[in-house]
Length: 190
Image (cartoon, rainbow, N blue to C red; front, side):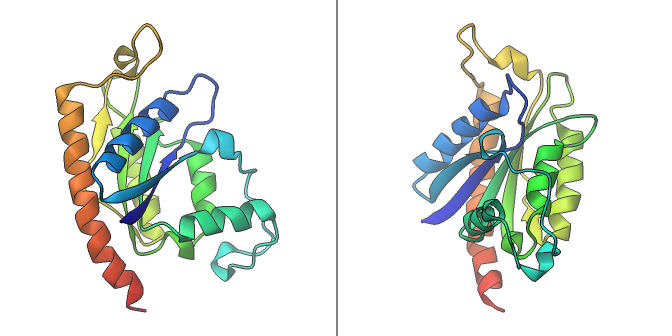
């Protein structure tokens, strides 16, 4: 079984990413292919990057960085759950990514994006994919893009999906498994 970290990027109160992240984590766990861990950056609460030495050196001085490094290093794959803020992904995720360098490398990533409007977070996806590539993290092509996200929360505040979202999630998880198998070989070939 592969270790999959699902990282929810939003930190503001009332965020939707937590519920969406838990939904995709549950789906991934049900496949039997992944041991999942859900990471909510709002709860993790990493400060703005405060390491004196560049992360490429892996000489971390702060405990929060050492713990973050260990958590990301043990992963075989990721799913990033991101909202779209100002045509990009949230600064909290940018900060979390930039804390580390080597720990992200040669691992695949799936992306679940959403927005309150019709664009479904696709502009955030484009920005995120560029930054992931610089960390040698390969974003799989298949994704789950959720438009009009507020309409998918019922009166009790629970996230609900539809047939298309479920279908896209199944395809994403299938492709993520395929890439995880392949990237594991590449990562071990140092």
